[in-house]
Image 1 (cartoon, rainbow, N blue to C red):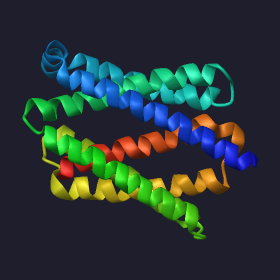
Image 2 (image 1 turned 180 degrees about the vertical axis):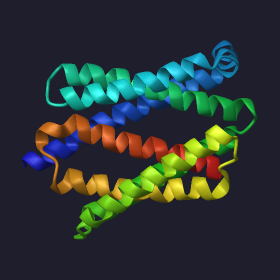
Image 3 (image 1 turned 90 degrees about the horizontal axis):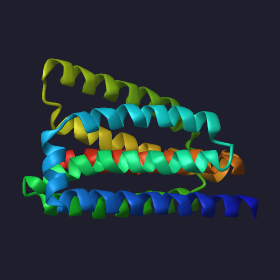
Image 4 (image 1 turned 120 degrees about the vertical axis):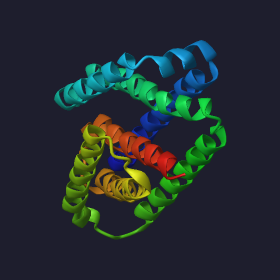
Amino acid sequence: ETRRLFIRKVYSILSVQLVLTGVVSTFMAMHVPTQIYVLTHGWPVTLSMVTSIALIVALMCYKDKHPENMYLLATFTIVEAFLVGTTTTAYCAAGYEGVVLEAVFLTGAIFIGLTLFTFQSKIDFSFLGAALSMGLGALILWGLFAMLFGVQTGYAYALIGCILFSGYILFDTWLIMDRLSPSEYVLAAIMLYLDIINFFLYLLQLL
């Protein structure tokens, strides 16, 4: 019963995070003055990325302290929603609204499918942990190399990103089911939220 309540709490928080992200992203893409400002100024994105990293560190320190953890989580979600919004705004401004919607629906369908599979499966997904960590490290280095030397990451990079975060959805869902403490509901929500957001962003590149 405790585990069931924990899971329900995690997915309730996650749902609020995703709705907030959708609302912020839609506003940014549809509100023309905001769209123009986002597309012509780079500093808000840089500041948001730095803030996001700082908030993750703070959340790790205060993950078990209520209500500080919820305040930090709400702030983190707003910052991440802005970062997602900058990407969707660029796509919409270029006339790719259909691609964004397709990515949203595909991300939702794949997340639900992988979640149901993990919940119904008896597989121990602990074997994925080390491989996912190494894969994420390699992907980050690949992205940094491309950014520093002006190289296009291309289709393969996006495809590997999608596969990697599909694995993270499986692994983190399994952790929530079997390993995480009920007091770690904020950590669990952040894990799944970042899995979904990253999968969505790589899928956008792939489409």
